[in-house]
Length: 313
Ligand code: NAP
Image (cartoon, rainbow, N blue to C red; front, side, top):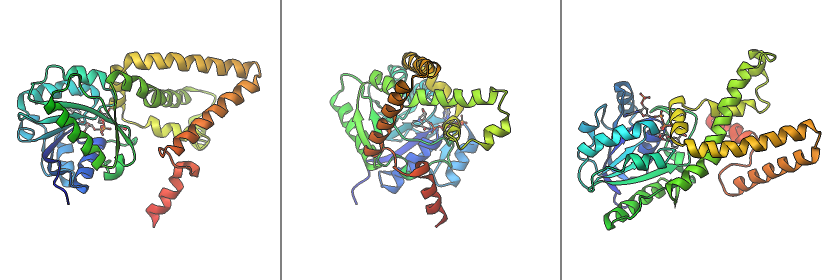
């Protein structure tokens, strides 16, 4: 067995992503000791009782002072306040990594950090609609991408920190890629933020449409609607922050989407079957590419029936 990459890590924000990291790091022997920090004492107690972390408390000052790795897994809007505290209490030489879904605003928030702290922004493109310390599991990041958006003009020490962070994600089974924060934010606005916005809007709109009563929305939900409700069940605070902090990129892709939607509306109104079929075939082709890239399974019902069978076994 190889030596762990880190001696002591503190997970700040022990929710879905934070607890999944803790489970994965423990399972793959990537860190000797893992402690936690969360706003709520209840979450701290639960995380300890579930064995996610060995010790946890609400105050970063008490938890981070002897850590060589600090992971920020709080909502994007809370990153800047936590970073201010870490700037005072983190040990010299500590690596601070965030996992926020938006990278530009988090890099800005880290701008005033001490020179002896190494901030490496990362975003695992993996998740579920669940939240909290009991939602995490070790295999969440396996065969998923973790996007790292390094700061500019890196020192030799910073490059070493970057190498360790990449090794951490690879140790968890993820593939890593580096890109700049602005590119990340526009790419993820397309692949993640817009789909969530559409799901939230669609599900709320269905709730508002008076001609279909609520029982029918629930009863016939298997016809596509149900899959949107899963995405729309995602944490409201996390997603509020994503849209507030990735405003420009989301508005840009939303503009393109609105134009495409208007084109669909026109095709339906004018009976333009050829345009509809062309657009739907393109979409189907893209799904095939996603399956071929190993980012989705080619099973009916997204493989959920198979998961059920495995759980039942
Ligand atoms: P989560 O399950 O809601 O966990 C976040 C935790 O952070 C909660 O326990 C929350 O406590 C705590 N928290 C909030 N403010 C804090 C503060 N100032 N100090 C300490 N703890 C604080 O959320 P998550 O899904 O793990 O998301 C965490 C981060 O990962 C976010 O930045 C998100 O953008 C990113 N991310 C999420 C996904 C996903 O699919 N969920 C995927 C990739 C990246 P309270 O509940 O008491 O407020």
